[in-house]
Structure formats: C-alpha cells, structure tokens
Length: 255
Image (cartoon, rainbow, N blue to C red):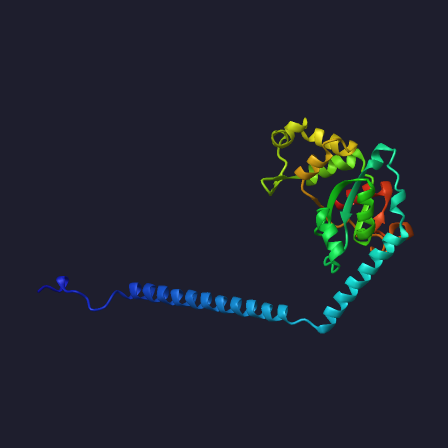
C-alpha cells in the first residue's frame, strides 16, 4: 500500500496543542466555578451564623428603647389637650406634608403600627395628610420620627412631577400620562395630573381617593445633610416635628 494512503498514528502537533489547551481551559473554568460556589456557600453560612449571634446587650437596649417610647407616648397624650383641636381656617393649613426622617428600626409596636398605617414604613417616605384631630393625635405619638408642615402648591407639583408613582393593580407604577389618571380616577372627575394637584392642595372631596391612588413619595437625604440635631424638636432648634411653612425648603433639598 502506498504511503499516501497510510493512516497516521498521531494527530498533527498543532491540533494536539489546540485540544490540550481547550481541555486545560475547560478544567480551569470548572475549577473556578467550583471555587466560586464554595466561597458563596461559605459566605452564606457565615452570614447566617452572624445573624444568629446577637449580643445580650442588644436585646436589653431594644427593650429599653421600646419602653422609653411607650412612656413618652403616655406622657404626650396626657400633656397635649387634643380635645381642644380647632379646624384650620386657612386653606393651606388644611393639608400637611409628612416625611419620616428617622428611625431605621423602631422597636415600639404602637409607633410601628402608626407609621405603617400612614404609609411611612421606611425612612424618607413622605405623604400628604388631612390636618384634622385624628392626624394630630397620631403625629404627636410619632413626632420624634417625622417632620411635617404646610406644603405650597409649588412643592406639591414638584413632588408629583419628580417623585410621583401610582398604585396600579397593587404595583408601584410611574405616572406616565393623563390617560392613566383618567382610567383610575375618571369616575371622580379627575382626568389629569393638574386635577390631582388641585384635589390635594384644596383637600377636596376626593382627597382620600387620590391618596389611595398615589404611592408614598420616596425622597433622599437633604442636600448638605441635616443642619441641626435630628433628635431635638424643631421649635427648640432641632429638626423633628412641626415646622410650618419651612417644610417646603426642606423638601426641595430632598428632591
């Protein structure tokens, strides 16, 4: 048989080199993947161990914080005569803008429930509320965790255009057009964003429907930070509590 028809016993050197390189790369990739999996497993296990272990002092501190908050609530209710609350006469004082500025974790159950009821479940959440007796009682209880005051028409408009989201089918959805507004509030005579702004500012008859349609506004920390102590009331030179018309400057710094 001629040599040209003979089958070589070995693959050409170049082919062998390519296959060897490919095999080595596959093994390296497999080893890297296994190493990543092992690291991830170790990290998760470590996180679980860290989560489980808590110093006894932390439980004591949490208990003391909750106890102090409960005591403060009782004193607040006794000290403040909410029964004599007078309905505001000025239009802009019928509406309050409330922002939660403190309390990453709140250990008092009553305070937590109120914050969640008002849709202030996380820091930097902001909502519009009627300025009535019920709201005043709730705000007095949660006052160290919130700042509030009377928003201007301009502030309401800025909030809606820059941070406005609607609650559609239980999901947080950007307000993209007036069509969306009309679909959900058209039966109330509200067909555009300007109608929503007017309803909020005047605290109109459909204020509650508009409030349910809107999600809480998620704001940022104030530009240049807080100027005073957040644990001291505004009327004593701090930050928390009622700040009247000054709320507008703060909100603009948080947008």
